[in-house]
Length: 373
Image 1 (cartoon, rainbow, N blue to C red):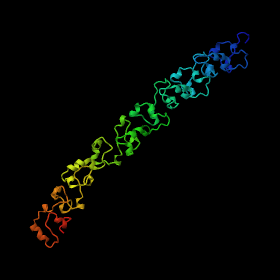
Image 2: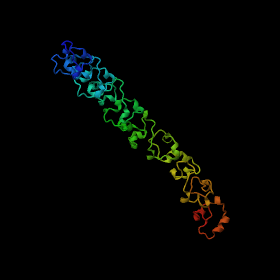
Image 3: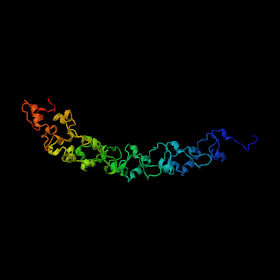
C-alpha cells in the first residue's frame, strides 16, 4: 500500500491455501530457499518429522507413503486417521491394535491379504493339531478369526461331508490321517477294517455293498442297522413284514435258512390236519401256503389228483380225513365212506363192467374225475 510496513499477501491465491497450523507460522519456515518454486507436497517440509515418527508406527520401517495428507491434517499431526478398509483389507480383531510395520515391513505396496503370508510361522509352529504334518490348508480363516488364534472353529458342512452322530465327536486326525486335502467322503475309505472284520453277518462273505450308508447311520456302534437289500437273499412279504429280525435270525445272521421249512419245521411237524410229517408232505411250504397266513392253505388237488374243489365234490367235504382214512399214507382213500353205496345196490349198476370190484377205491379206477360216465 502506501507504506512498506504492514505488508499483506493473500496466500489463498496460490495453489497452496494456508489452513490449520500453516496459517500461523512465519513465511520463512516454508520458504527457506526463497519464494519461487516452493514445493507444495508435505514431505518436502516435513521430511525430518516423517523420519522421526515412531507412533503409531515407525514410518520409514513400515514403508509408509510420503503423502502425509493420507493420514494427517494441517491442524496438528495428531489425531491421525487412515481408513484401512479402502485398501481392501479391513482391520478387525487383533489386527486393529498391532503396529503397522508388523505387516508392512518397510513397504505398503505388493502386500497380499491372505493370512498365511504373515502367519506362516504360526502355521508351522502349531502342534495341536500339527498343521504341517496333517496337511492343513493355508487359508487360516477357515478355522480362525482375527480376534485370537484360540477357540478355532471349522464348519465341516462347507466341505460337503456333514459331521453327524459319532463323527461329530472324533478327532480330526482319525479321518484325515493322510492330511486334509482330497480326503474321500466314502464310508469304506475309513471303515474298511470294520467291513472286513464284521462277522454277523460276514459282510465280505455275502459280498455286501461297501457303501456303509445303505444299511448304517452315523450313530455310534453301527446301530441301528437296516438291510434294504434283504430281497436279494429272501423276499419278505405278508406276515413276515411284521416280524423282528431275531424272529428268524435268533441273533445269528450267517446261518438263517432261506427256506420256509428252515423256520417252520415245528409248524410242519405239529400239523395234524393233515399230518404233514406222517403223510410225507413236501417241505416246500409254498406249494400250499402263502406268506400272508397259513390258512386257508391251497393244494392243487384237482389238477394233480381228484377234483374236490370243483364239480360235484366241491363243498361236500370238511377234513382231508373224510376221504383219506390213513393219516400217514394219503395214497389210501375211500369213496364209499361218503357215498354209502351198499354192494347190493352198486353191483347191479355195473353189470358187464370189466374188472369191476366193489372196494373202497375201485370207484376211482373208472371215475377218476368224479363223473358218472
